Length: 112
Image (cartoon, rainbow, N blue to C red; front, side, top):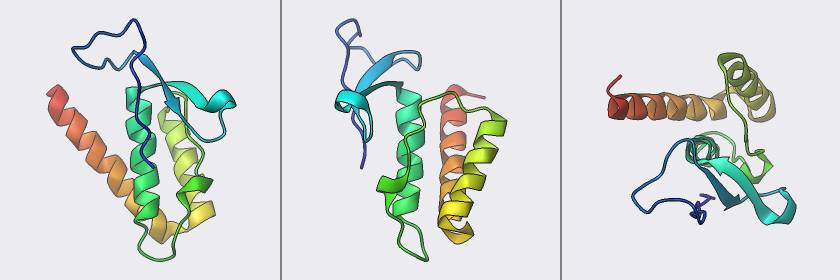
């Protein structure tokens, strides 16, 4: 389920900034909305979509918890380990491919 961001009253109409927070509907949040960044929406959406497309056993993406925090290398390692324990290695290979694709896509856009 892709979460769509809504503009806050102070946001410009020219585009999104990675530092701007957006209220989005999210499971398990109080009041049905959560303040987050566009990058976190993209990150979590890629994980959920990869879990939905898992090749072996069907995975219910609603069991995935939205990660609304900064992810350092150690945090990402723990997340991948937790996902492997919960869903199995074959399912998580899709998630790792999604991480790689997103990294290359945005590194190319940034000119890194």
